[in-house]
Length: 397
Image (cartoon, rainbow, N blue to C red; front, side):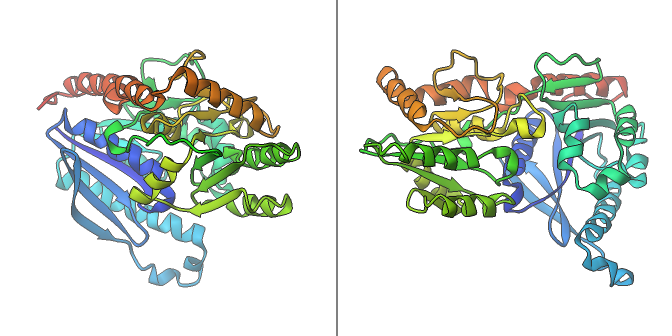
């Protein structure tokens, strides 16, 4: 069978975390299905990849229209986005027929008229991927206002009715759903990240890696450092913030207001060896500290799984069901806007390294055994095979 993974995220730095997930899922699919393709957007074009084991081979690009008849309105970014999306869907329909696609896996595609016509294709096995499920409240918070007006929850519900399976990254523990839904947690390809080097020094480095949004809550770290240094502590603590994002300006402003420029370092976007070097110098990482700002109590962010695979202990302020309360390498802080209690985090870390001197290798082993995308996607693949059999498709290679 031929599987096409379609996602309208831009293939750029802002979507790096999403791209890791998407490509990892595609690599898992390739182990089960004959031909696997990834169709994704760029700034001025869409691109089609063919998955070859652990690699992506670019096989075709599709130029978006110049929208010459929309010279005035095309200057408005949101309008341009809709126009690109329509072109993206036009090519999507062509790819389905040209490459004889049997399985269509869609991540967060908007339910336009053209999209709805595609999902009405009864020949296809159709799957819809939601990063946060249930999605209604998240749409209110994360979707632009124009999208919320045009695409109400009723339209997403209608698209759900037309697909064969909804794959959700659950934001609620033990959420009850019918057989049309499969809820999974995010995973990671451990081999794609470098194991952190352990090093000893007389100061500690805190770390965050994200395309920073208000829900990351990293202002809590900066405010926590301010409270920490008011006590004239002996140990110096530095905070390394890696990544760009809409909240970065506010974090820099807060750092300046609190006179913490010496202790807060903004690295911008780092990748590959440059990112590995920063991680090697850091001791404690921070996942999301502001899920409550989105009305969430839990989830399975990719970054926490990456921290675990790298072997760096980390702090979170939400429920993550892949890490039990007894998992020693995660420190949980209150789900509110209070400053991080840096002294308590230091105390936890110092006790941890005494009890687990080889903590990095222990964390890596846990990630390999429990957090792989192969394990997370297994129930999805089994369900696809069932659906394919019902539609008269050959279920495996």
